Image (cartoon, rainbow over the protein chains, first blue to last red):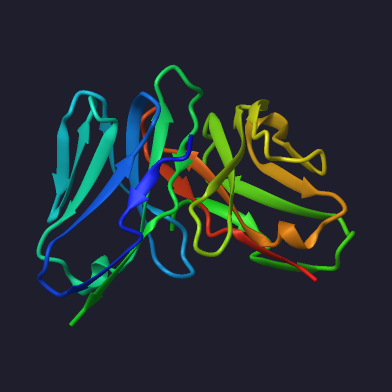
Length: 111
Length: 114
């Protein structure tokens, strides 16, 4: 039931782009993305509903492919502040209103 | 500041002792979630409340864990007869509004069982 995230870790130089994927074997109702910095609580980024809509703010955007039950998070022109661990949380179609989180993708942005 | 306050921030206890954590959302959200997070892992769902009713409890949670939310406001999570494997960060979260709204996490209680 836990979604699978890939890659496990990414190292970038400032200004480079990255894509983080989140896949589920179950039909999903929604996908949430969070970022967590070391020693801090996870912070909300965005929510996507089934239907393939794409969302974004600033240079971070995401998509949800309902057919594949996969969501992707796109980080464009990365900044040092993007460093942290990114988690997707999924809510199953017809399931209870709880989020199940993946193991995370650690992103490091270097100068 | 997420508006979710958790106490204590850190707790060190000896194996076999009981511990209790508290979560206070700023305003009275209908739903309240408890998660556990260990190093290098994502938050693991433990249980959640709709007002004072506990609607779901993870199958992974042993009978040593119990949670309450009297009056639908603050919540407590108790672990009895702690084991070293219980060492983790315990996170509380409440949503902005209803379903499909962002979860706001507290800063957590870090439990260390020696």
